[in-house]
Image: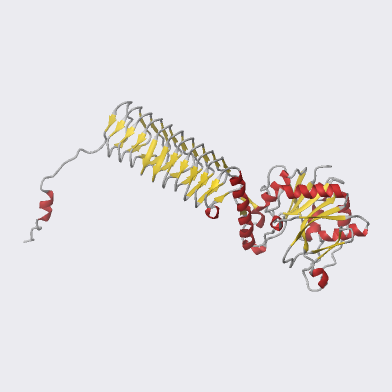
Length: 462
């Protein structure tokens, strides 16, 4: 069978979201809503994915490469949306139609629909689900052979009989069609309804009238087809998507101690035997190796962690931490920070755009910005690289096996050679040769009897 063309309906205005952000671009676990449906279609084996957008251009330039964006010029219903994509449909090949605001649909569900449609020989196959409360959904009426006789809409009083309203099987809004028959039927669908729109389900009735079969596939998990119309429904869908992500990681060998307090975006990758502690948030394109411990109370955004890394109670953004390194607690690693193997960024340490050498330790209370630090170095407490002069950022170079004492400030641009030392409280403005000790502070002066002098009363004015 020819690979299906998947048409994604995404032209709705989403006014109930009460947002300046178009509904289809609201994020769910790190991915815009429309991208979830597109990803499911591509993974299901779609030969072409066509997204139907609105004339406002909200989706222009926002879709993955290779996805076709077609505009529905007027809001004339789901059938009108499909007709807007008529030029993209491949003759008689299968056409799958799915709503863009149903981001929980899975590749497996789409494949099952396409397979069932191909096996049935029907002109159309619809996805149905059985609900405890089917209110608001179109009811699926079957004939004696089990095929779909019609879909009865229930939007207005009187649309359906009491017997039809008692049916629990509903139309889920996902369809597979023979492409040519679909376009022919849609061309004959009228607009004689309350909204004056072209309804896609009306094409099913025309296909039946022409003697064609309309089959159905029932899904067991109704959450697959939950829609999003407002932020309450967005939160509901997000919870389900997050649960799926957690379960996939745990089945792959990751321990998530408390899923209820843990957020993991869809594109995050985590290696086996890693432990994610409570209140940890892994976002963006974060990649974590094996046998790591991350958290508690840790945020990692677009971060790469090697194997056996420990990050405790810290905030990491756009950085890389290599194998065996340790971070935190209360560390802040900013974009461009690189911690090489077995290095350390300790308590209340901030590192930005800096290369921290293998085995080097920045244990506590330090800021390292725009610096290159060699291996085996130890930066004492309150070591600061003064990298910004108000106009330009300057770089600091610190060699291998350097020992800076507490409260050392390195005023960039400056170089500290291998095996060098600094004295406590030094403000280093000149390069330090390899193996040297740099002391850059005022000489101490003790004033005898100072306390007693302060206790003497001030002389009275005459």
